[in-house]
Image 1 (spheres, rainbow, N blue to C red):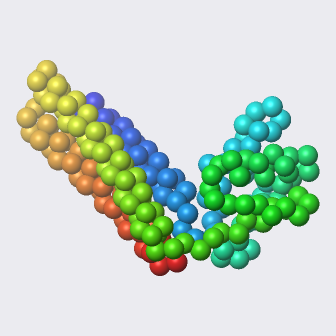
Image 2: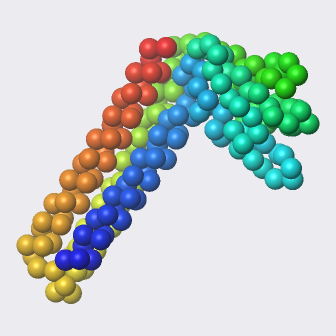
Image 3: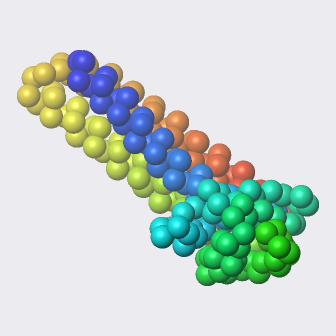
Length: 187
């Protein structure tokens, strides 16, 4: 029985990993509202390596449709500017010294619908990942029962726990999707 409970904690951790990835992907979807998370995928060639932009600058949201990037090292301003343009986020920096201003363009109805479809694809990928974790957990339980390491009752109880954990993870995915969908459609 001890191995099965240990497995449940591991399954929960793996399911939470899928949810975490989904939330990061949804955070990167541009909704027409400024958010520092828009720049998370941007990596800058700096000091001989690729660094996340938030390790080289302060990102803030002074207005709902404006991001500012305050680059700390003056010599990296053009590298940060280039990295933002090359990230294909549809953002064009206006540079004033070490401060980059990024206007967030208005979203049209067609683009909003497209973003909702992308969000649904991300959510489905996360659901599939969670279901794979569930399958792995149930396979382990079957093997433990077959090898007589747990009883049929333990197997049934633990399988029920795995299903409840899966249902909770799917509900969390659906909630994250609903929040993002509402955000996209009501900007």
